[in-house]
Image (cartoon, rainbow, N blue to C red; front, side, top):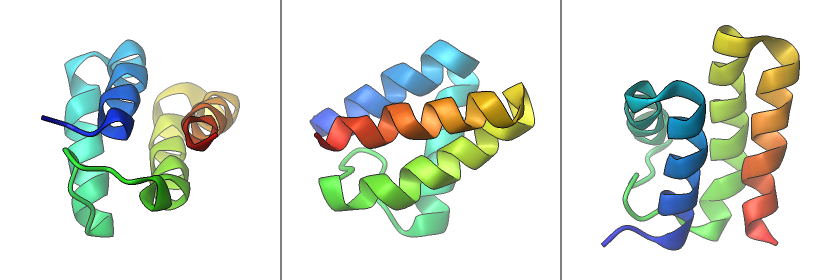
Length: 76
Protein backbone atom coordinates (compact mmCIF):
# COMPACT_ATOMS: atom_id res chain seq x y z
CA UNK A 1 0.00 0.00 0.00
CA UNK A 2 1.58 3.25 -1.15
CA UNK A 3 1.53 6.37 1.01
CA UNK A 4 -0.94 9.15 0.24
CA UNK A 5 1.90 11.37 -0.99
CA UNK A 6 3.16 8.60 -3.28
CA UNK A 7 -0.33 8.18 -4.77
CA UNK A 8 -0.86 11.92 -5.32
CA UNK A 9 2.56 12.43 -6.90
CA UNK A 10 1.98 9.42 -9.15
CA UNK A 11 -1.36 10.93 -10.26
CA UNK A 12 0.32 14.23 -11.14
CA UNK A 13 3.22 12.67 -13.01
CA UNK A 14 1.15 10.11 -14.94
CA UNK A 15 -1.25 12.89 -15.93
CA UNK A 16 1.72 14.75 -17.40
CA UNK A 17 3.84 11.91 -18.80
CA UNK A 18 1.70 8.76 -18.88
CA UNK A 19 3.56 5.60 -17.85
CA UNK A 20 6.87 7.44 -18.17
CA UNK A 21 5.78 9.43 -15.10
CA UNK A 22 6.05 6.32 -12.91
CA UNK A 23 9.57 5.64 -14.19
CA UNK A 24 10.59 9.27 -13.58
CA UNK A 25 9.33 9.11 -9.97
CA UNK A 26 11.24 5.87 -9.31
CA UNK A 27 14.43 7.27 -10.84
CA UNK A 28 14.29 10.55 -8.89
CA UNK A 29 13.41 8.76 -5.65
CA UNK A 30 16.36 6.40 -6.15
CA UNK A 31 18.67 9.38 -6.71
CA UNK A 32 17.39 10.97 -3.48
CA UNK A 33 17.34 7.77 -1.41
CA UNK A 34 13.55 7.90 -1.03
CA UNK A 35 11.20 4.90 -1.16
CA UNK A 36 8.84 5.71 -4.09
CA UNK A 37 6.01 3.75 -2.43
CA UNK A 38 6.46 5.46 0.92
CA UNK A 39 7.06 9.14 0.18
CA UNK A 40 6.86 11.16 3.39
CA UNK A 41 6.00 14.80 3.94
CA UNK A 42 9.65 15.65 4.61
CA UNK A 43 10.64 14.15 1.23
CA UNK A 44 8.33 16.48 -0.70
CA UNK A 45 10.53 19.62 -1.04
CA UNK A 46 13.54 17.83 -2.57
CA UNK A 47 11.35 15.53 -4.66
CA UNK A 48 9.21 18.43 -5.93
CA UNK A 49 12.37 20.21 -7.05
CA UNK A 50 13.77 17.08 -8.76
CA UNK A 51 10.50 16.29 -10.55
CA UNK A 52 10.07 19.94 -11.52
CA UNK A 53 13.54 19.87 -13.09
CA UNK A 54 12.64 16.74 -15.08
CA UNK A 55 9.42 18.39 -16.28
CA UNK A 56 11.42 21.37 -17.58
CA UNK A 57 13.01 18.94 -20.04
CA UNK A 58 9.61 17.77 -21.29
CA UNK A 59 7.52 20.91 -21.07
CA UNK A 60 9.80 23.89 -20.59
CA UNK A 61 10.56 26.07 -17.54
CA UNK A 62 6.96 27.16 -16.91
CA UNK A 63 5.69 23.57 -16.85
CA UNK A 64 8.54 22.55 -14.56
CA UNK A 65 7.73 25.34 -12.11
CA UNK A 66 4.03 24.52 -12.23
CA UNK A 67 4.63 20.86 -11.38
CA UNK A 68 7.06 21.73 -8.59
CA UNK A 69 4.46 24.07 -7.03
CA UNK A 70 1.67 21.51 -7.42
CA UNK A 71 3.71 18.81 -5.65
CA UNK A 72 4.80 21.20 -2.87
CA UNK A 73 1.13 22.05 -2.23
CA UNK A 74 0.55 18.41 -1.20
CA UNK A 75 2.30 19.24 2.09
CA UNK A 76 -0.47 21.61 3.19
